[in-house]
Image 1: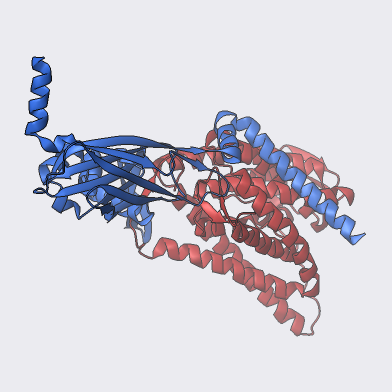
Image 2 (image 1 turned 60 degrees about the vertical axis):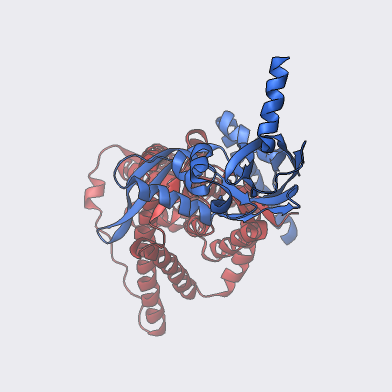
Length: 251
Length: 309
């Protein structure tokens, strides 16, 4: 009885916590097949309230999508004996293969710095916080990785728009490029009030190769000898078939 | 058929018609000039964004196919010196194994791209320049209506002095097995590192160094190339997992058709003109690759994960 009372008081004292995020994705699976050229994921949802919305505080919705972390080597070229050669290298153990953020307003306006530090939301935090290169000039290597991945479309660091209707319905589209790393992609949806994270919703997308892609990739990695022999067989057959066809045409 | 195709091993999405077109174009050139085309295809694959390790391994696979159709014709015409082929092959297999080792070692250091490009610049530069000068001279001689120049007998003294002599009946030679073994070895190393058959090195070496008759040179070199590139393909497939079957098939289809077209074009042009064209082409590829090494790149940093990018 006392517990129920306490809960009621708590609920009354912090009305914002009565807000929940309900969300869904246009697809939970991304299948990489022969025709794969990238994919658009629609993230949409609503903010469900048990009580009327408090209208005095600013509401924010932020969606982040992060790909599997892959150890990545960053190399730097330097001119040696007149040619450009890879010299220094740094290994970044936990480099996300993909990161995208969408927010209902510029992130700095709807998220306090302290909250960002806690949840690793903004690209700057999420990427630089996780990736710690070791050694001299480590920052430069981290910056380079972010820059290159940005150019490839794997890091979408300028917040893409998230449409928020009547402080209730939201939707955003995340573009996944063609050169995706297989694995589980984490999607986090944060709801903030005056820059403080009030609630979050977590879900995942699984990215997998399918069909011929899956078959060839697995064969190449699990049965490399058979795969190699098969490649040779196909090559030799194609070479023989081609000369046979042209001999037939000539005759 | 989808235009964009996702390559399972290279893990990039490329235009299928671009690959067919590249295969076809290099096929036309190889048909015209009677070269394998690996030395053109591999750098072109770098340029369209295929990871170098995948380009080299896959190209080795493709060469198996194009050489196979070639060698069949030569076997029928009895222009393959099998005994010489085996000796070259033994050297080639050892060379390929060494080459793949070196390739993997440098890949770990992040220097494989440099190695491949340097090899290309050096070999294409030297061969392109030699061919260019030689074919210019040939054209000048053809214009001058003088007596045919005397062929100078080569000095082969030190080659004759080597031990382990063997009789190669088809070539009509009685020479030591050491020079062909070494020729095979160096071609094997090149095949593994550069993703080429190595015909452009082996054919001149067989004629000028070993003194083989011209009519058996092409067939014998093709015989060796098939086995060495097949071995290289298997080594890359089992140690690096970098042979992309989808890529190989697309290049093959284009290449096979292109080669037939090229052969027909080739018969209509004069040999000297052909060689000048080829020399210019080789020098152009060489220049492009050299520029990549000499000019300051726009991005000084590069990333490496599972597959060398």
